[in-house]
Length: 439
Image (tube, rainbow, N blue to C red):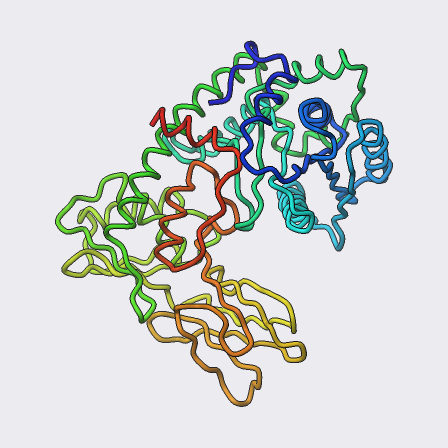
């Protein structure tokens, strides 16, 4: 688990040890904003590996007049360190509400695209134990139980868009230690004015934390939650392999074979619901209670609708299928890709014609495709693959967008179930290995 900040103030040693555990020898990307956390990460990595093995990536969100100057400042620092640097621009109209969340989403998409384009093993970010404490405090404020998955906090590694790993090697180090490290090296940093803007929840939480005591407490809580979650993920993965199947008609079957529905079976069902229904978020507390009541038999009825999924009882267990509501049309331009119903990623291979995707309004709500809107739509085999000028890939629920490393065993089982490609292995095996031992 992340080491305590007090015992690990030597940033250079931490990053030197970290670099030796990376199994992928391709270059590493380092996300650098110019703030103290990311600059400490950059400096420590430049001293731990040959600078040519690093690519610094600065995301300019275009939200402040000085952001371009800050990116140029980072570029000059990188030049002194001998590290290649690129600035990634968030283009287009910016949202009025939910700005921080949208900016974060755009940032990770830009970083993921850069990692694919540059052939990077992973992207490193400078998240600290202070960030972890803030995140856990915010989630607890929203009413999460102590054993809820959200109280794992920020994972040490996450896979974005099913292709790019983001690693956080300084997650067990406090910000004060990083700033001492930079000061000893004579390196200054940029203070982001938005970090003082109390309109943002994270800033308000940061001001209310009793720094070191809360950081240590949050680290311990996250460690316990991670160990519990890894155990459940491993057992749920085994359950999916043994008891779950996808039928030719697109329905999903779960065989209980007389076994009860404990936390492992519920965890597997929750994951299956996200894959089957394509819901944007995991089940909320009300949805979890409804699912648990239905599966345990405490809730009467032969069917339950939850997470855009219809669950029906049968003699062996349960049948899951997509609810027939909220099924929208998608038009994909030539050569482009799009996610339909958050269940399928579809690429239009034609160079000239749009591809129209609509729902088959039978019980399974599978996609139908057409190019000539007047000719109607044709069906598609759930086996996926290239079909008449388009490529279809089934998504593995929310795991296809963001996959915490601790959920990797369960995500791999779901990928096997859907017949999709396995998720790429994490190039930093340490977080999952240690958590598995603790579980």
